[in-house]
Length: 439
Image (cartoon, rainbow, N blue to C red):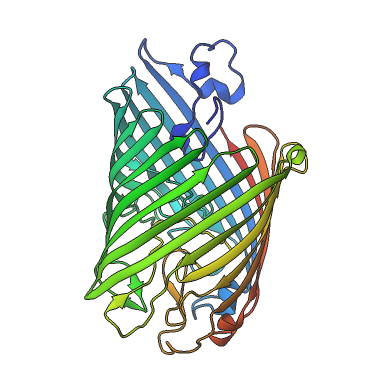
């Protein structure tokens, strides 16, 4: 995290170098560190993101009856603005407003990702007890590790935020967050969001074992009445215990994350687990060219009629397979060879392929929002095939400067046998042009 860099979590922006250089501020820098009094200052910031998308064969052509088109254009508009008030060395108040809209697409809105006309997206207070301990209370975005369990969900139009209380400890080589959180459920109207439908309490820690080798470890308790498994709803009390090992080397790096999930869903005993890995190597330093392979192994339910639920819960994960794939990280085996590079100045690119299978033939596939989409409830045994298909992805981003960037994304999902045997099974294609201004 460097001085003057704009972060995904905007409350992590660090423009402190401008405090002592108020005369030479230029452009958007004039909005940073505006003195109110000797010990009080304010900063302002925001972003505008415009994104034009083209979907062909949404959900492999299997769309609800109230959809007008399985293939469509859509335009996402997002604007966010925040203010940061610092009072001395101990306290600050951070507030952020958000407004998102969807145009062109004639199909029904998905409010949690498509449109929220106006919302209080973040509003929290920080209080620092000393150099190691801090408390944060209020509505806030959150992210841990590689975004596999809890994150702010940058890809969709409306980002995810939480009502939370967090106690933070950091001493340079160890960070510990103890928290109680509830996700904010985005609604499409004006300041009508909901909260306290789910609850999670837990501890997430990061520790440097050596200069270039670190470990995350966590213990979480998840409570919800909103989730369904095999199209059955109920009360879920799930514990998640796990770790993540990762390196920060110049050439070769690896990451391994594993967690075990246990508890109760109605009368069923939860026994599920997930393992994810990523190994990569820089082969051309001049172009920052990195080749790697990532993999996931995330359990599904072994048998529908036993006394266990083995379906992995992705909690509040990012859409791990992009915006085109109607499949989330549940009941999943994937292998993902990829390449990253900087072919030109200020340009970065990613190209990769995901080969995908169901982990269990007795469980279906779930959306990135953890909603089961296949098979249909009336035909639960439609197919025993595990092959889901392959997803090819290309992403290119060009940054004109610190504030302005443009991105082009394209992906193609070739439907496998399971997709074809449980529905229309058409291939999905997705294209996107995105322009972002951040300040």
